Length: 182
Image (cartoon, rainbow, N blue to C red; front, side):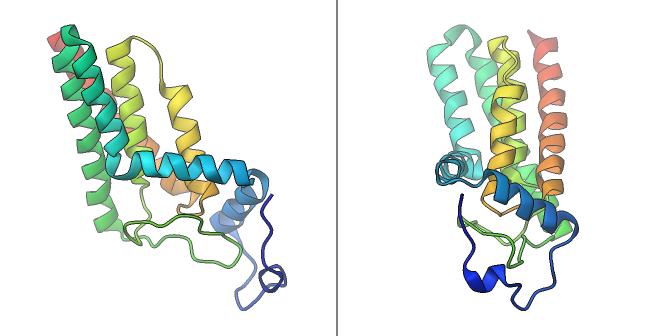
């Protein structure tokens, strides 16, 4: 477990956490072991700007020639879902968590929080690549990424849930379209 500095543990200048901040701090208290933080940082780097998921789609297209078009369309869909999350962020403009009870354990490209773009692109990738591979990847890929954003202290719980919902809807719509053309 990570420990807060003594001045943070004593309460400092901020009010005690409540609502989502309290829940986020509790998630970190329970999950933020050094190993979990290392894994979460790895997921964060992999999912940054949906680059890792896009690369996997390109790899799938290179290896699976029979379904190359589907892989490329799915990879483009992942990037599109990421772009949609950025558009929503710019409209909503919710700031990332800033409270002494929350550790921020990784850098972010912006201060905007809602929805989580990592959750959006990961869920879209899981839905789209499930359709391409014929295996349900959602329960394997989505929960670790969502948890990682909380462990790292860069999103509120509703940010990751909204991101997952957005990615799931966009992924399902594109997957349905792909299934009609197959």
